[in-house]
Picture 1 (cartoon, rainbow, N blue to C red):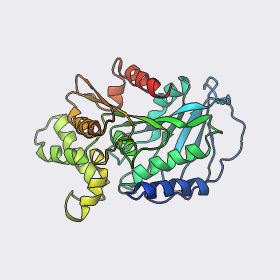
Picture 2: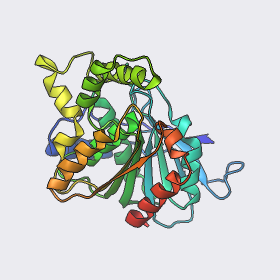
Picture 3: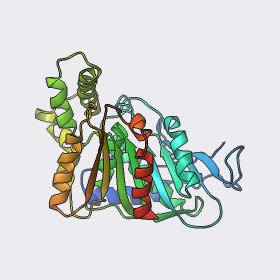
Picture 4: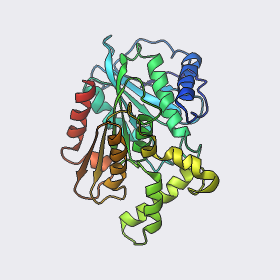
Length: 308
């Protein structure tokens, strides 16, 4: 797989206003240099697909893998965001899923982002927008239709995806958000972790998620001077009528319960944005949930209904 490295002067963090977000996207477009010119090739085993790794920023983890069919057609896009408690994980975990969507004919952007040990929230949301801005700028190169894409996130990545979907009053071209075990409400996760006293894997993971949310907020508890960053992290509080429709999937007994997504469905429902929640039996979380029989097919069908 060849690598094209190009610089970007993206802003360090999106402000909490749509106007600032738009300005940041424009700035990133203006500052990002073109990738190194090359003729798309078919790396061994890609079966007609092209792929490369590019940078959308100059900091650690600000990079993404792009997979596309170099036939000159404009294709819908799928942005994938890995999980890992916001503090770990890597896009390489998503390679198999990336390939599956590229094989379906989409242009796929499998992104890394700054982890919580490198930068506190909202750096992770900023990075997702940086990846989207870079994809827009080089849409022709990657056979990408910037007016037609979805964002798919897993666990902590589901939180980032949903935060993108509810940012401002709609993101141009974003037609849907999918979350696999998404952490919709870090505040709910904080409370659940505080109440978890047992020694089952689920209870242990609830406590671990509480600690991870605190790290994401820069080490601050959700009170006092840190209340603003926690408010920014809380996806349901940002619902607005032009937000993207969402498909949110959980296992019934996992440590990120369906009640997390029910909070967002209630808020988006009040402004007329459709949210579908699918609950599977068991305790599977994130990627293992996606691999359960019929789940990937359900997600793929939902995406196809929105972007073709």
